[in-house]
Length: 79
Image (cartoon, rainbow, N blue to C red; front, side):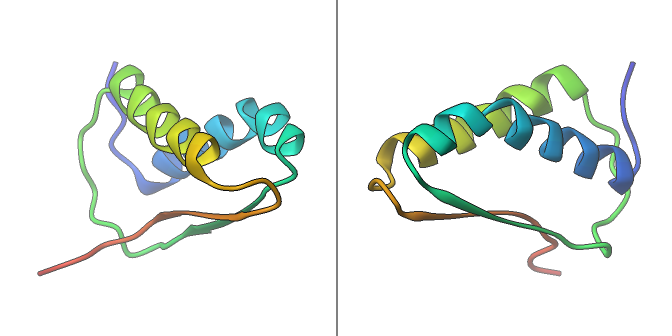
């Protein structure tokens, strides 16, 4: 099953932030979430996308100092 809407991508990203919230709180970090609405429609494998989001955010948690700030966003870049 593939996802193809921005709303589904946002939900998946928010779910990953929620899932990693204990690690974020343990490090006393703040996560700024921003999800643009003008992202083009894409067909994506949600399992793979979840792994990508988990990797990005867990690396950010790992390499951001305690009490640091992490920006986690979905946005369209380029043309």
